[in-house]
Length: 124
Length: 187
Image (tube, rainbow over all chains, first blue to last red; front, side, top):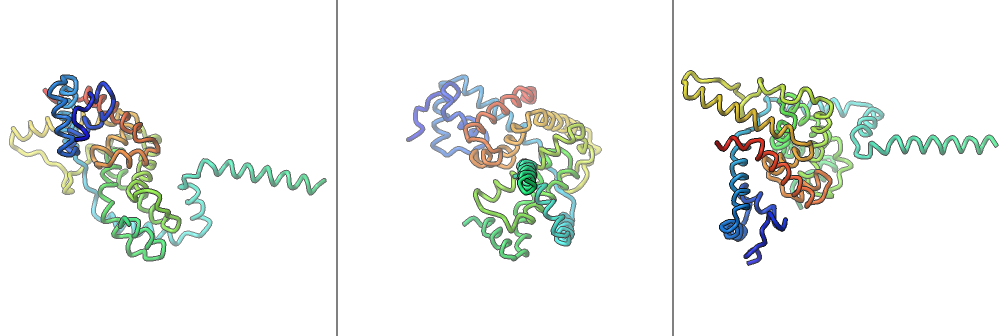
């Protein structure tokens, strides 16, 4: 069994996530048994497990709400409006949303400098 | 191949009618995540719309480098964090108008024990929301993805753009803070 006689997750930092996952019932039977065996002789891990299980119950009280009806219809309208936008406006939107956004001013500056150098070369 | 990735590839080929399938599968998890991030129902709805609009806009350039949901939640998280940074003072102001999961506005029953129970529940709920909202933004996002979306550590790491071990220590710190802030719930 790979998890038998595991080192203390709190002291060693190894498999520490098993203590978190214990409360969320994500552990396999083997993992759970290994943690149970360790916890039986480790008051610190026992306190951690108990605290985490209580926290889990508290967090469960926060249910999300549902959205209002018509979500899909509103989205369809937005998509339709979006597809009617002229190409340049869509390019602006792309530039606003792209993860490369920070690189755009740098690229523009490089382009300007290159243009300036090119014009100077032509002038001379 | 993951069904979502297949659908995105079909969208790229022009089969836009399949977009509804993605929407059907992911709108609720995305909305719930956003609702807990911004704690305001109309804002969460608006941001969820924006997420799916961006997915639709990106269909032509979409390259599957990770799970579809990882990419989707990355978009959602970035939008939520931007909103939170721009509107810190508005966080949680939608709470009084919040509706229940069935869409009905909460009503307090006439029976006294129910009122008491509801009040206790409301206080606890308020404390949970407050405790989570006061976490640093990366910790907050990690907790919401781990606890409520039940995402794997690797997936959370990709969404947050950090290593798996960084996510684990982020979550450890976050839960430690929450345990101490909500310790009195045990009493």
